[in-house]
Length: 135
Length: 442
Image 1 (spheres, rainbow over the protein chains, first blue to last red):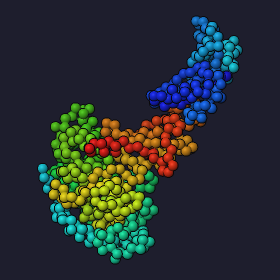
Image 2 (cartoon, each protein chain N blue to C red):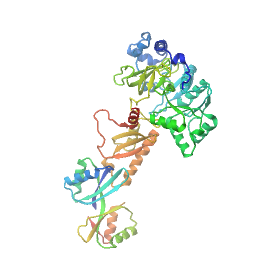
Image 3 (tube, rainbow over the protein chains, first blue to last red):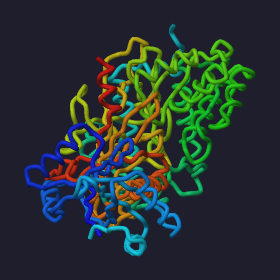
Image 4 (cartoon, rainbow over the protein chains, first blue to last red):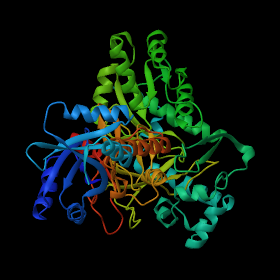
């Protein structure tokens, strides 16, 4: 299971820059980054190499941040590979709340993060079908 | 235009005569309340003031103040000065802060109140030839019945429309020939919008003037109402504790509201030091009822911030004028006519989430409608990774506050520590309506 950090931001100029500033100065290496936004606030989700360090740095700087678990898996960077995974999930009756992709460890692979209701069960399911889970 | 003055001998009396009348009535009233109302007797005894110490209005300052809490402590009838058998009417305040305030009137009290309301109608050109259309709510709220009796006293044809059923109100304006309306300014604006939506021209109405009160309004709204309904719009002030609408009201000069000071003596005090301030200075408005029988309040602190002007008005009246209330000394907000206390919002926030939450209120007026934004800092432990969860938290907060105060609010979630922490009493309210008001006056 991957550790993801979500950060609450008001929807106003300079807030994202402030987050990045804190993370950069603390030497946090980001692997993934995505924003879910509404008209007046947004939630930034990041995956960092050292989640603990990122979370501490954010909290020390008065951001509303929380750690949560998410499923990550690696697939070959070929057409149709993602479709295969989606098919497995659909067959298993698993609904995806959100998903994003991030920097793969190798150039011929892609790393994907998905959030479902029960990430443990999802990982089990994917593993049983031979999908490579990021632990 | 010079409107006929309803009671020129009073409304245009020289200052010395007015003070003599006030002094005479005050001394009698203090004797009465000392003898008949236990809370007043106790307060005066505690302050070492005897009724015989009050010989003229110059002695007013010796008397203790009365505050809203006194009324709550003596709920419902503990501050009445007559036997209940003499009381012919009861009214009550909206009571949004908990216990409502109950006030009572003898027949003479009703007569005097009606006379004050008749003066107010005459000040805006009302005569017995007018059709006075009362769209304030009828009931425990003093607005409807107060203006109703005033209109009848004046001899005008009174239309007791009450509030609501807006299309029918407009039709009554057209069919019955309503010439003077009494309603809240926000209701007037909503009628104007309805007329616009239905392509009803103001030329189909016969209105000449209107008395608009029970909530704060701006000069901008005055212009909009005057233009939208084709009338002259006047401000009227009152509070149920003192009697109801028409404690003070504007004349054709629209430059401050003449106080019926032969019945209600006004003072302006510094709300912190409680010192009486000289004329022309802004401070908390205090009233002493010198003719009321059933429920005579002595030096009652209204919490409204106002200024008194003693110069003779161009209309010929010498009655002291109060300039539009500039806010309140307590933290009460009036949002779309509803009394709202920040403490209610705080309680509602705590009901959703029982950890102390830091919040800030921003009041504004958008398209002539009051808006209230509640800003709340989002705590880290409430955050998941989902937008939906945050949205549903917002909805829960909104629902709790809306139902607690009876006014729809919008919620804005803030990052932690966005709100300034203050050492003493936190500043929790920013009322942009007041800022706009001040700006408009310049």
